[in-house]
Image 1 (cartoon, rainbow, N blue to C red):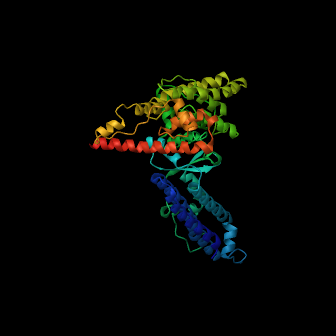
Image 2: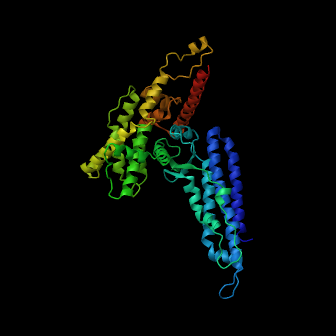
Length: 464
């Protein structure tokens, strides 16, 4: 049988997908397990599409072609037809199958902590996005759909199976829609730099990717444009080409949403990423100076907060970013005209933010303060009335308390990860991965358990 070795190899890869599914039992969180299972099913179906396309389309087409006489009257074997007509598509099929296997394996055998899902997926859940979202190690921070990751590389095979016509042959193949029997489910793969998967300094950059996902689902940029139009204003023109201008505005807008939601130290993460990865202006990405100036404006804005955590994190982040802004100004990368445009854009984004329901860092701090100061939530009160369900309450920690517990005493805290990570990143000079990463991860786990407990208590309270 022609292509027997390749088809056998792909069948082995499909069996490996089953083995990966069995390995998911080692993950203690059912929700994450289900997300990864959905993703693996997509890759498995992608492999099945390749296998069926080779058997039902490529080989059968080649067999029909061998029955046709060439102009010279010479006959060709099926293998020769495949080599002459389908060599490229067969070669690409092998490479694509290998990539699917690698991608799926990296989802399970990864250094990405599963607890990161609990933290990051809070935003899509808040916006009601119910599609499968998985995290994957890669060479850059990027958000891609399963269509982009799986279906796009398979388009030549899928289209070939849909076109049964063999010119000159009376026998014809039945058209096949390979995606019907092997559907690829909707969803997203968010990649983070492999070497940084265990480094909290660059975790906040994933918030940028999360908001790009939300934009793809709910057209946040278009909503911003509509908001500005209703105010009889226009978004500043950052580039004369309309497509480039839209891409640049989107990138800056995503940074704006990320720093508002994660907190001031997102600015530090962005700067660290720019320092490590050579950043160049492209049609998709504006100059580094433009993006940093946006987050710098957040760091120089005044906000009302009763907790010292915000002020100290904002101050620390501003001290790290300010020298870069000063350098850009001195080198004329940030001239007055550009700063005026970026300031105008920032002002419009701030106004727009007030019209949408979105978790902000200030919201997180206020919720943390309120949850931590419930005078009725005491163990004694619980003992007095066993019928009264009281959510677990942390004491109210300030900036130094969080820093000391996490970084000095190695005590994990059940507080919002964005609050905890902002303080950790503000004291990054104290951070040691081997000592502190387990504490940071355990804090996220405790926070999630506390969330589930509080939701359960609220539900029981309503039922009673």
